[in-house]
Length: 436
Ligand code: NAP
Image (cartoon, rainbow, N blue to C red; front, top):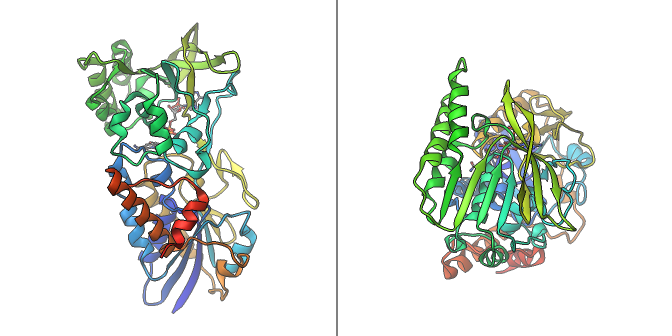
């Protein structure tokens, strides 16, 4: 039987689903030895450091990841960084197949004046900050103002706005970072405004997320009913309207018409507004927008401007893949054709297709790439793999060590009435992995 050595780089959803696709493709004549390599000392990628803490159901996919990890042909090598501890060239030489599942972690920039002011943050910093990512613990977040503005009309903007707008007590039973909940409990923010540059009919939110908004117990959610009326007119003029779009508009109409509770906490979704400047003396004080109309699906400036007094701007307008030696980034993702990068190197997930789709999208995407990989397989190599590449004494977090970290966090969570208490210190995570 031919056994092929596979290195998957990145232990997020697309990495695990790729491992699963290899496991499912095994037969009497074909098998795979899978090494999942991860920079952080913890796996699960965005399921750990991206998914909003108040959406625990989405995180239950981690049970699938752990099942994949317990298969005999799987090994985890966390705390191993591509480009630092191992090079892409060495991995290419050692393995039959290298799959880059490295995601897209760099927040896109607006490119407007004032974007670099203090308290103008990217969701790429703010989300991992509240989700206890070890690299983002020290992000300076000032919540002393009364109004926050979130740029972008997608699910990340919605997550960010919700975390800022809900009563922090609602986050007590979640796995939000300890440092974040302390800050949120001291927050003066009572109004959060999400600003999208086009109309409701172009919003990138998904319907379940919109439908959840009126259910918020301590926050009133507002959308200008006139913007929904206009969007309905626009979609009536369309030749064909997708079901998802109709559902989205219905959900937004329900929000616009929903009777408000009269509570102090407010979340508004404002459309047709493009940010053109962030103003402030050393830190964010105001954001200026151009008012738009939509023509042919594009946001066109009306010539009118308006501004919002705010002390915090968070930009959630998408992500780009990070560059590292040996890969070319084009349009924010790793250059590839249907997942093939070059020779025996492939890409999956956001690294392959850009930052689109929900977690489940990665399953079919990874399966397609694995099918292509199998078509291209040659003679299996005989080599040691990543173990032969690491310096002696390198502290790898393997599956056993990760299970110790996981168990420790879950036990701390049980005591605190939470699903887990995440450890944020890199060294401490490694120590937890060494416990007996
Ligand atoms: P996204 O869905 O692509 O939304 C990005 C938003 O930013 C769009 O409204 C876009 O508007 C806007 N935008 C882009 N460039 C802009 C600019 N220069 N100025 C103003 N606005 C700009 O991206 P995302 O929210 O980062 O989400 C990434 C993926 O993760 C999505 O597939 C999302 O569904 C998924 N996700 C899912 C969940 C969940 O299932 N609960 C949670 C979080 C994320 P235009 O349309 O006009 O370009």
